[in-house]
Amino acid sequence: MSTLEDVVAANNYFTAELAEKMSSDENIVMSPLSMLTALALVCLAAKGRTENQMKKVLHFESCSDIHSGFKELLSTITESEEYILNIDSTLFVEETFQISEEFINVSKIYYNSKPEIVDFKSNPRGAWEYIVNYLKGKTEGTFQTFPDNSINNDTKLIVINTAYLSANWTQSFPWVKTENESFTLSTNETVYTQLMCVEGSFNIREIKDEMLSIIELPYGKNKNLRMYVILPDTYDGIEKIKQNISYEQLEDWTNPDKMKNLFTEVYLPYFKIDSSYSIKNVLRQMGMTDVFSGTKSNLSEISQDNLHISDIINLVTMEADEDGTEESTNAEDHLGFLALRLPQISFKANHPFIFTIRDMLSKCVLFYGLFQKP
Image (cartoon, rainbow, N blue to C red):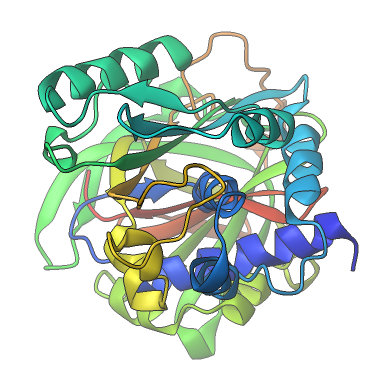
């Protein structure tokens, strides 16, 4: 495989492993790619056992040139006229550490990132406020804050990665068809929420043995970006899906070649998820332990001092409305007179479901989410 394909494979394996270990009763969306990009940035500085653990957990062992691969991938997926995708990774380092000039230069070349120096030791609150303001400026106000309990006087290095997507559906959901309808939670409790509705030709698949259905919702005219909604047949089937998730399963479920193009009536809840997710404990469970240890971490390419990661936080905002992932007034309606036809099948996401967003040119999974309640 090429270096780019190696990085994409590493990302998609990492996505499935994170999905399996995610534990939350809330709605959550994460960008495995932005997490992996941030960890690859840290990997620039890792040596010895720290580097070996990271490469094993992140599936970098077979990558001949990790950092060139990430540079190529990020350039490929973020340069589009049909959508806006911003992925950013920043290291916030305690000011008492002397950072290597070589690391600063190399991180800029491959990841367009520069370490930020903050005063965790004597002013943790001020450091938190600095990071919040940095994020606001970097993301045009998309990310307003992150948990202040991630920072204290002992914090040495915080890794924050952000992902933001703005895109319009290929077939927008007519706002006049959005109605207040019932949504059944996994506890069998019924609530009411706004369900959007559209009729059109979509790739769809029903897997009776696994009691789930998958629909493909493309973005833009080129359809290079696509959301896959994985819906269990029953209101409480989400746990079974989560338990069975693997790289092979995700690849199979979202394989367009195994879908049928049918005229479908699609119901999808309007949702907006602001997610702040720490993956420190998950990475420890996966075997990446030394980089978080004050006595075992070897990040000597950043600093010769005893530097270790205090936390890794992924910030993602995801919105699904009638036009797409962010409210827009210029989405083109492609329905025409299709509404005169009777749907061959109905796909109604009125109970918990999983969704992924994938770039079809690189085959890279960009986002993974779990919608459990309105």
